Each structure stands twice: as C-alpha cells, then as structure tokens.
Image (tube, rainbow, N blue to C red):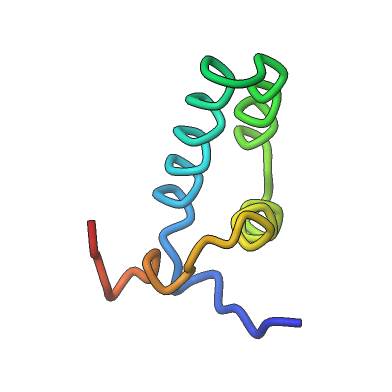
Length: 69
C-alpha cells in the first residue's frame, strides 16, 4: 500500500499525538476510547503508523527532518 521508511518518522511524537487525541475523546465522547491509549503503549511502529493512516494523519508532519508544530 505505502512505501514507508519508519526510520524517517518520529514514531514517539506520532504516538503522543494519537494518545492525546484518544485521551481527549475518552473524556469528551466515549470513555472506551481510553483503551486505544493503552493499546498504543505496546504498539509496534507499524501498528502506530497504521492507526495514524486510518485516522488520516499526514505522516509528512512526522518526518524527523521536518518539524512543523
């Protein structure tokens, strides 16, 4: 599907942003979303990226050579 070089991505920052989004959702929408936060703690890089892509995250924003915040 995608040719992704995981070494070029800041996976920890991506994981933190996903956790923030799920954590906010857990308090504002559905407490069950907190399980997603816990799942991310043990997720592989591939799983983190797959989750981010499923949520339409722009992976270019997480390239190590490009910090846009």
